[in-house]
Length: 639
Image (cartoon, rainbow, N blue to C red; front, side, top):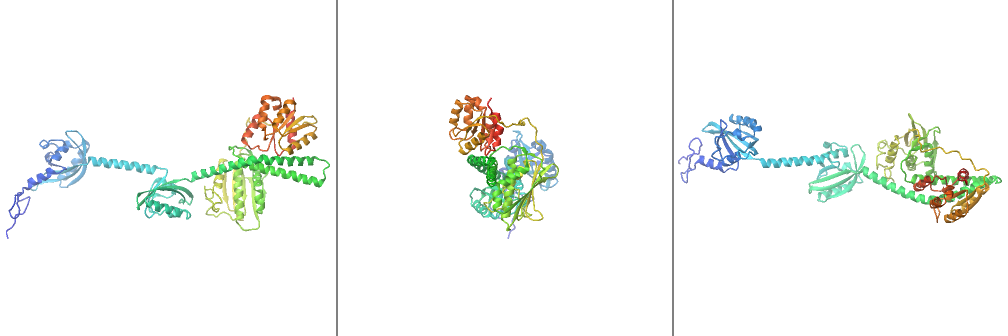
């Protein structure tokens, strides 16, 4: 068997096939052809750093004709800022270490800088190192695309991280894979605590089935929105709105999560406000109807009590009628005051009186539930600047909660203690204490959180105490709960004592002396017969000449024909209201307009109050004390 000639770059570069058949292969020419056909630039430089050879792609990259590139200094083709870096790399190549790096070159013809990836190694001929051979790949466009992509990713990463809403992704098993900074703030967990955690333990048991159903729909490719409660790391319950979509079906779910707790609280407050407004309008509408008969009852009771020959046993009955009429009137007034809409206004306020008014509102419920009310008031408490209506809302909420807590606890006798005293420093301390089951220690720090409630579903909104907290803070005070040693629960409110501000808006009224024996001619205009008759009897008994009418139009006709020292006018009448009657008098008969005394059973109506304040005329609220007319009549005396 004959030996075949082997290919060897060191022996014979023009080797043929082993059998000697076929064309001979010139390896140097083949290598040159291959290099010439490469899309990447190939440049051979000598030890003097000048170009020895280059393929067509190399010459084009450097900006020379193929024949002119030989002999050019390679450093001239490198961007000035990169020359030191390239020189150090090529030194290592000449020392026998191949190098891979990126740099920028300058096209000789156009002056354009291009980014290139360089793979450089030693170039030897027959074992002798004569320079370096480098392959240069133009990466300008890919690098620009990569830089653009990196900037875009950085921009969107910044948008995600700076978003006020939580943005999270979950895998198909419901475990967090990515979270943004807002997710940490909303949940209270750190990023590394959330990633890998299953979302289910963060949701209440009642909301979990709904959330799992939406998660399955999201995996199936649906988009949607739902609300749920969830537990923060510190145990606080919040309400979140979750908008979801699916970047990768069956693999990943993207969620946009917004904390809507405060929004929900505002919505609930608005709903409650609208309810109270509706109640206020309803109560205001019936207040006149309630106060008119109460005025008649009270007036006739006063007339009976004024009878000197009235039998003692019947006097006791009349006193009871009079007392109960006044009590009913106070209840109507308290209900009107509580239900009406008004701007927050701090005025000198007696805290004990506000508590009494509130207890009177709940008096019936407390009695039928067998709850004994104990008042332990410090009668020396000073008045303080406060909004009595807002404080009444706080006290009513605390008392109602105490009632419900005691009702849920078995026992034949329960007691509600309402206590006031001076607190630390210049403050008034109010304590409302019950004999219910108390507050679980693990919940006592959470009861003032919005929407937190221990009541059954439908029995409470969880807003009462949070609203109370806001009102007390507006008064620069404090409110907290505690469990007394003897059992039950105690809520404590501390309000700072703020001295009333002196202002020119309020002037002390000069004392008014009764009319004495001076006879006045009085016209009573009221559609309630009981009010007309009782006023006629009382004023006639005082020696006055009294006429009555149920019609505003009839009153105008009488006033046109006759002169009166005083005109007592009800604000609400079917044919002509007191306001309309007064405006007609002010326009056509100003002398009689200056002698008007108004009566009404609805002084909490803001529009009516503004009108009455603007007239400057006295107003006697219903049900009235006859003595009020003794004071008002002298101011209306005929001039």
